[in-house]
Length: 306
Length: 133
Image (cartoon, rainbow over all chains, first blue to last red):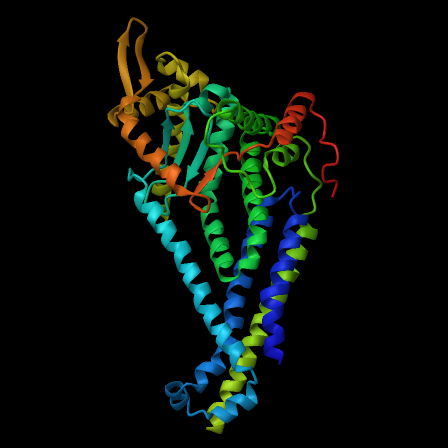
């Protein structure tokens, strides 16, 4: 009973709570803290979900002949001590396998992209793409390929010197602060628990804000705001009427909110935000531990009893 | 270990400087002298540093040097980068929505976003109904 309750809390209530919190901490003057806390909480909940599924599924495994003989468990005792209905066990097992397969797919997709990326020297590289549409990308090399800043000719033409420096600082911040690592761990967590997908936009926004704040420290807030805002506007201008639209966030563009945060810095709620994330993470960690301890104690009893 | 770390950060810094210098040359319509590059750079760099970076970029084939009455001028080499550009274009096109290694500066704007953005940048007033939290 306790196992099922814990599993539900971790797998359903956890993601809903953390993603609601992520929406509330969007306007943060310390997006770096928000991003790290959010990615950490997502990873905890993703792994916790996997643990919860395993806890629900193991009575099934214990009933299988070879596992049972290995642990010298009797099916009757398992039923008595871990009263998880067979269908639930089976569903948890199938679900767990599917989630792990999703996580593997996330990683393999990333590996494919890295292998397609052109090799180069060890140092960071700037690549200018001859394209009139203004855009800038940071491509993380995962230490296998060089980290790259990719900017278009259109971007260089659109922005002035100061703004160009701001864009380079912004993209560089993505690479230096290993935002791809946070992003990948979040994608893995989403693979393990699809409810966590609700947090994706929040994390993406925090990572962009983080890079904006680093760029603002290197130049100034107004310059970064204009660089970001003018790039977005010019991009829409050149793309108007032509085929491919740049991808838009789930809740529309994040650009106006970023420019707003740069021009009119939000109040500093870092302690409140930190405390909220900390307590949520601690709660989910405790839930995971209690679940594991409970499962272990059953296994213990079973082994002694057998 | 300490020394290796220092060497690594040194390489990083030089890569960063090269990127900045290259960005200046890319942005310029005409070839530039080291002095002009130095002036256009956002960060204060010694003339000799700029000249060294330009020489290094030249060795890598990323800039081209021309002798003029004012001394050497440099311009970014486009042709050299063409195949890499093509590779990137393909990478960007195929990367899809959920690639975590690639981050874009901006995402697309809706017509409402555009109006709000224009107002913020030109009038410099907080957006109405923005989060007061």
